[in-house]
Structures are given as C-alpha cells and as structure tokens.
Image (cartoon, rainbow, N blue to C red; front, side):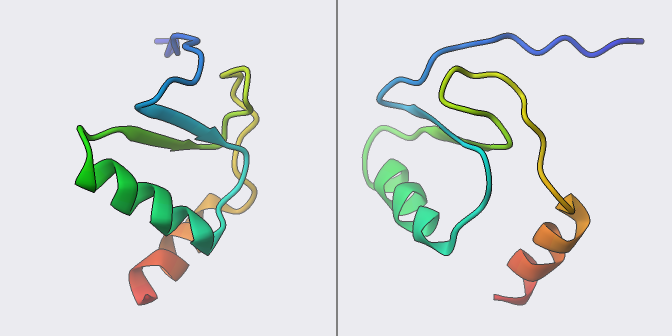
Length: 65
C-alpha cells in the first residue's frame, strides 16, 4: 500500500518547516491561542516532503523537554 500525501500550500493555519527548531514552540502556542493549526516538520515551503534527518532522535529529544 502506497501512502499518498496531498500537497497543500501554506496558509494561516498550516506552516511547513524543513527541520525542527525550538523556536517553533512559539508557532504552536500561536496556533493554540488562535483558531488552531498544523505545523508540519519535514516539508518545504512548497509543501513537498523533504524528510527529517534522524526523526527517532528528534522525537526522543522532544520528550525530554
């Protein structure tokens, strides 16, 4: 089974980031204080999947904070 990912452009409620930075916690708080939103890590500004380097380590680091 092949997963198809719909390519959607960034909007007021959708933000794409190619990699994680702790500064993005501000984006998450902004979404929470507004109408909600989605922060997608591993996509470029065009909505193309670029992947995440060492995703397992990224998830482990997030749990520790």
